[in-house]
Length: 373
Ligand SMILES: [Zn+2]
Picture 1 (tube, rainbow, N blue to C red):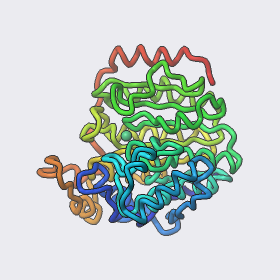
Picture 2 (cartoon, rainbow, N blue to C red):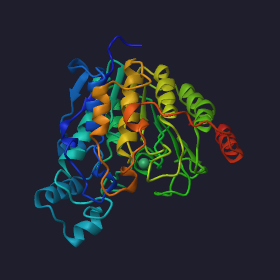
Picture 3 (cartoon, helix red, strand yellow):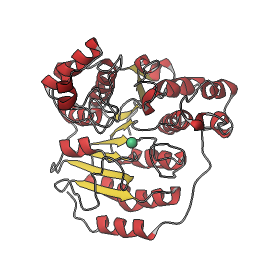
């Protein structure tokens, strides 16, 4: 353990930014986490680090310069040609043209690059705007214009961390991250994601060239099952790997009420993973990811910071924090009406325990028999 207290990397660029009125990323997320944690008194100025915007040259350690130029041009012109759309997958329904379409991802990437440097001497960093795990070197993919987890791992490595463990508990498979480090025995990759869901990669038998452990899980995954995954797969593999750094992608879309997946976790499951990984490495970076219900993502990610920074989560939120949650709206989704009261007044979900399914047990056993990378 290092004496350096945990730090939170954020930016105000996310506050008013939207991917468009119909897109799942029209909702505020990072700004909610900032407002909630400040309202709780958990995020003091000394702990907050403003994310720099990465320059194309810095992004060029993994991304294609021609793609970066196309992204900047699209932001400036707010329109793309058919040729650009076909080549770089920008200006599509998933990856739309929007006002901050270069600046926003470049700020997220800048935060992840900075995190690697700040962790040189060890410590804990939380960067909820990070976690864009689908980004490809030369194209946008799945709401991700850049791949900040890849950049974070490269930055950690440049700052002296040789062995990096990447753990991803988003509902979707991190296809971009797996591609970036395929076959690299010094990057352990563990992903837990919903089966038969986009991007349809990350099958149980896909070992990414030896260093990837992919666990597709059936719909309805509950907290007891996630605890089994933590105990049987994540913790033993990460401990045995003796990582110099751990990067956790803590997407918030595997919770029961998320509109883009069919998993049934409560936020307790995510916080348990966040806490359990902490002692296993001197450097620990926790990123965000998916999460498409405004209240759920804000509550889950605020609780991640409480977990990392050592704050107790009260049963009932004080009024200023409740006011942050009540100020949110979810236009264009019927679940934005008649929002359950506990999403305003609490951070912690009721646990969603259940039976550990036979299929899941079989898959954990299959991965348990695999050799270390
Ligand atoms: Zn996701």
